[in-house]
Length: 273
Image (cartoon, rainbow, N blue to C red):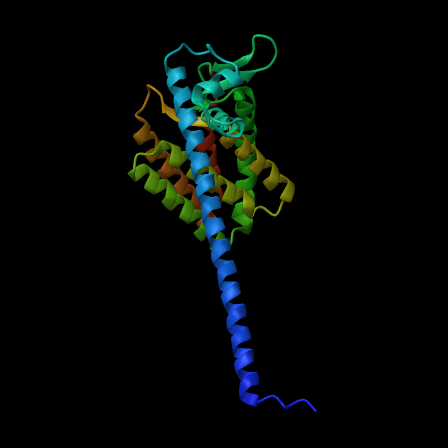
């Protein structure tokens, strides 16, 4: 008959097994953590190389006239000394900045971007990519929909909705204070998107939001005009929007519709080049 195991020995064995399991798990976690850190470092390094390549090509762009041929993708990739994947990321950065265009076929390749088309909004100008006509149309349609959304907001805005609108007004005020017209325009668009979200008309709200997205996605920068300093212009626009939200809060239909009419008639969107 085999001897009965000592209870103390069984306990020690279980403890040793558990310690071994914990040790193995710890080693596994350490290896996984190290691999994760290495992977993150590799991604950061690749991203840095792409930015560096984009900056190298930017130097070339700045040395030639707008519309000049820069070379083929392979020629520029070789110039930058990066992999195909890294070069494609650099190209995406350059296209986002509106600095290059890609033309296929014989004689194609990468070209420095032509002068950006413009769409005028009041005393500021949106510098756009090649979709200028689409943006000009979107601005006109958006302006036509504004009174409908204001009517809906007068009826349906809750105290929480009004508080949300005021947070966008605050963001606009901060952009005025920091003299940042780009941040101001984006905060402005977010305010209008929030007004659209109040409407119970899902089709109207969705259409308006898509128009804003189209305008925003093709805008490269915000520039001044000769008529009025840009900082004064955005300060005036901030006050107009603040008054509009106050009118919505008071349920002042006449005042709100007057302000949105003033808002849109002062944003005559004439496409120029």
